[in-house]
Image 1: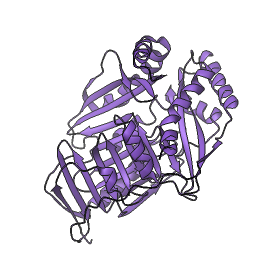
Image 2: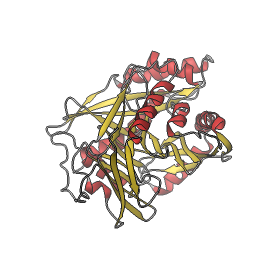
Image 3: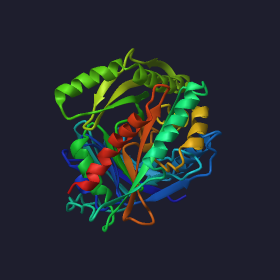
Image 4: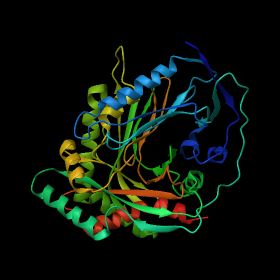
Length: 417
């Protein structure tokens, strides 16, 4: 077996990571200036063909097997030994296991966190240069077309979902919609990320295999045996008037409809994590997360991973957490069927786990929300996504308005220069 050298060294701190991406295909996972970028592609793995209504574990097991086989070939020299140093893989899994999921190992990694910055590269090569690249080009002559369902048809789908909930079939279901944009120039993920990072610094800005966005929702972070999952469910649109928005935040925190939706999402995550944890901590009530366009009810669920010969890694936790009630519904299996029956579109990797894993099995996975997929066969086309949690008290017109608010971050990023 030929061994492959991997070297990590500390570099000077304070980089603007997004300015060091050489091309639109470069990989990124950044929040508030900290994070990881990947340049070039060392190797990739794609998996698809699972059963949406059945067991979703096979694809994550295949990802783990592939990643561990690659790690076995690496001879790692790591001066820092921090979470995210050494070799890493970027992960973007589809919502439905039947669709394509990808794992990509970059050739070069630049990371920074908590006052430390580092450079990792794969192969017996000289230290790569860290280069700042020119500002990427914005879309040219942007135009829009409707998605899978026209607005009135999507609202009727929401009404059908409310009927099924009211009839007692399920408690909650998340229904998504899409929107397509065209440009005379190829869409550049770097331009979109720069604009998103400017306005949504509290989110995780990402690009993995052309899926680009700014998600506020962390499916899981695994670091030194502690797992964290940020649950968002319950949303209200901001007005831009700070005083009015404070009043709206108060009404969101008291809204029985939104609190009910949030409770299901928190229960879903907690029940999934408990078998892997020796203890868990669930705050009694959610806080209101203020973003530039919307406010969400939010809860950070934490747990201590149980000591065992093989403690849970990122893949094991993703297996049980995805899809959470925040993007699927409750009960999960019935909600999956309702989505399949009603939604009328293919989500691709929207609402799936997206992020990175390191050689220790630790890392971060967000839920791919507030995102868009650059068409791999036509770089001048991009598809935007938004979803809404539907419960018994949902109003179809209000849900459509909420979906419009959730499309706004990507729309604004595309429309700004």
